[in-house]
Amino acid sequence: MSHAAVILSYLIASVLFILGLKWLSSPATAVRGNRVSGAGMLIAIVVTLLDQAILSFEVIVAGLVVGSAVGLWMARSVKMTAMPQMVALLNGLGGGASLLVGGGEFLKSELVNENLTLDVSITIQLSMLIGAVTIAGSLIAWAKLQEVMTGRAITFPGQKVLNALLFLAVVVLSAYQISVPESLLWPFYAVVGISLLLGILLVIPIGGADMPVVISLLNSYSGIAAAMTGFVIKNDVLIIAGALVGSSGIILSQIMCKAMNRSLANVLFGAFGATSASTKTAEGLTARQTAADDAAVQLAYAKSVIVVPGYGLAVAQAQHLVREMADLIEKKGGEVKYAIHPVAGRMPGHMNVLLAEANVPYDKLFDMDQINAEFERTDVCLVIGANDVVNPAARTDPGSPIYGMPILNADKAASIIVLKRGMGAGFAGIENELFFNPKTAMLFGDAKGSLQKVVTELKAL
Image 1 (cartoon, rainbow, N blue to C red):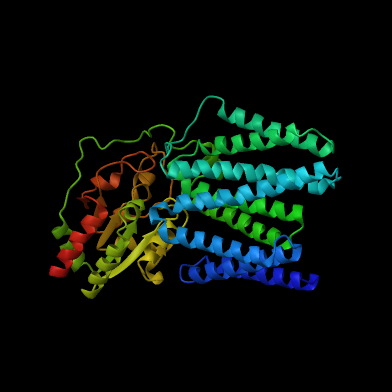
Image 2: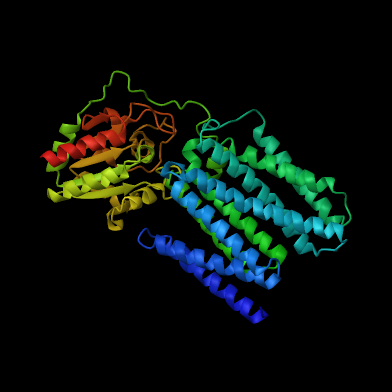
């Protein structure tokens, strides 16, 4: 391919990335954004392989077919509850690719005695460091989410000091490799090994409640690593794509930290959830229980209903029943809206994706800031599998670990119905004051089974 054609193709791909990212910011245009971004990536990959003459045309087509088949299988077979784990793994693969490319370029320069410029040498070391941290950290995030290992924060004495010393060791070894062109190979392997260990140690002290932020941050890391790799191999579109992913991941992480009223540093180093949280107990209080038929009557005669979805809804795979229930309520004259907390679920936008799968209209999904004022005018608030994001302790209990965290004002509705398996605590490990509110009725059981009973009762009314 001519140089002009390559540059033009990369420009088109970059524009598609930017448009796709813009459209991904809204549920109404997210599907279009995903397709446009995918088209941009397809252009970038094919043009790069053809321009560099890395592989034959036949091999390129075969790779695209195999990769597309694997991607299609993953997209169709992975359950919604396992989507965060898949995202974590994909982040890790991006970091691993950057590690391999950066390491490959370094080893190639050593084998042919090529004197790299200072900027390229620094970029290679950054690519290896960030790539290794990303893949190791992503695998730990996957293990926590998959419950292969405990989801609680894992800490030990001197952990932060050890992390600092390991990071310092990477800096020193990297500086040595840059300053001594014909250095031995053991510092290279040491840098890779220590960086992988650092990735593990940075993620194990982060508890399950903070996983949405971790996934977003690891996504940012993978983008930064990709941008570094782009500088190494002098590929413009990789630099642009990496910069877009890196910056958007950081911005999303900050948005979610703001939603929890915590700093990013506190999420990364605060070890939230390392021990059982201490807060006011509900000693002497009882939770009022209800039945599906009573809940159905309340919903049937309600003029306004707000549904608060949580991870329990995803576990039960009950999103389609929620949509069916909402349709029945609306047929009876009620209005149904959905309140989405920024950190509900286990990854950014988890609840949006879950409800979109059930074809819930996008204009019925509202962010916390948009809908919080409406709870006071709402007849029934239906909480399905959510816990910490509706816990009034965030406003009322200064001793609570979630005190100051912005929550959905479910307790201000005229009536609250909570669907849960039991009285278990959420990710924060604390009791939920909402469950003992006189206005709250608990409908115990699997969310799917409970909703099926409510839907059946609604049809009979």
